[in-house]
Image (cartoon, rainbow, N blue to C red; front, side, top):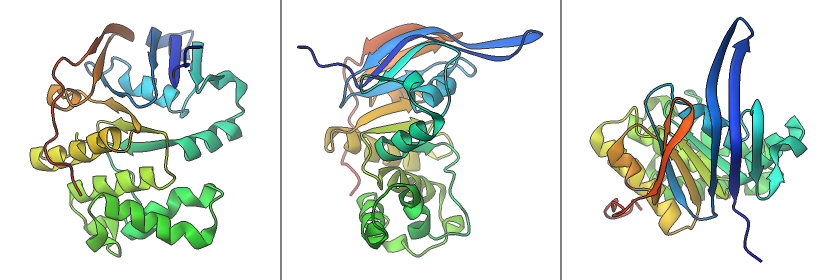
Length: 241
């Protein structure tokens, strides 16, 4: 019996506004992603990339169409159940980092554990392991406001990893970084896919960044314009330690 995909979107639609002014952000998007894939979603500003990521990451619901994660429909979950699955099985990395500036690196990375069901006695151990995995062991007690942009994004990745998620959703993770810092971040993300076998869904407008994926889905005007395998996947060089 064939294995079902981890993520399956069928004719997804998302409409904002009221009858007077409707915005069709998604207009019938369909695709599937198998466990362990690294997929980049590309397209011009306003094409629906972030809207799509929010729906498949359980941060929003579609207006029409269907979405299944691990074979279960998003429509079968109450909002509280969505939040539980999202916290346990999904990790998020955003362009703006979304760190609490007055908290230390360790305190920021611990935050998802508050709602995880993990024993509090294990929080510090798990958080420190995640921080060290992105090469920031020497910054554990620093306030996040005092870090560079690249360091802040490493903290965000550590926070996304602390609950050992199956899938990482990254929304323009290199968008606020210089090229050197951006390369270091994409190296870490690619390591999560290649070495740790995590599924990665990456939203980006940068062709160079997208070419580290195995597959690129291009959106235009809320629709899938193309869905292609990357012929020669870029290497991120030596993975960050």
